[in-house]
Image 1 (cartoon, one colour):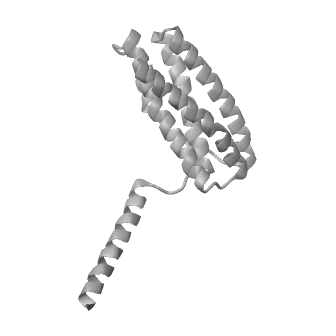
Image 2 (cartoon, helix red, strand yellow; image 1 turned 90 degrees about the vertical axis):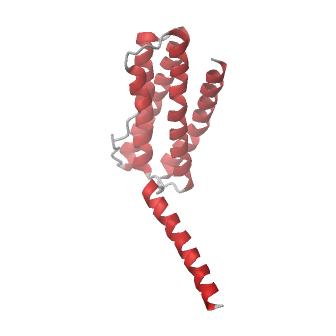
Image 3 (tube, rainbow, N blue to C red; image 1 turned 180 degrees about the horizontal axis):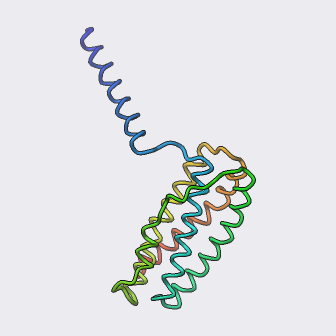
Length: 170
């Protein structure tokens, strides 16, 4: 009987150790205000990169959408800057958006292929930003930033759905 209990306890402690080790390795800590601000600024840079990319190859549809998203990003960044100044957070510039970089590079995609690439590049960026805000809202460390995140989360979700729907249509 003691052996059985020892085996069960060993199994439980090993499982708990594996979970906590996995969490540390993946960096699953709750994001703080600085992480959210940095992530939202990176998302804004991505949207600006989309606009720059469409100047080279985009049709009227993607140019208009990119201009609209870049304008929304500029407004969001302006409001975010006020929050950042209020709470004294210094964003990290470490997050790069590979999708924006790859779209901005000249390559062989033109016409319909570029339009598909344009929408496909947006989906992981939206998903990552939405996940960041959702994780932050589980344990927010600043009420003003939490309100900002709650306000922008539905908009970002709707834009993600639009990008997914349009991607499916293309």
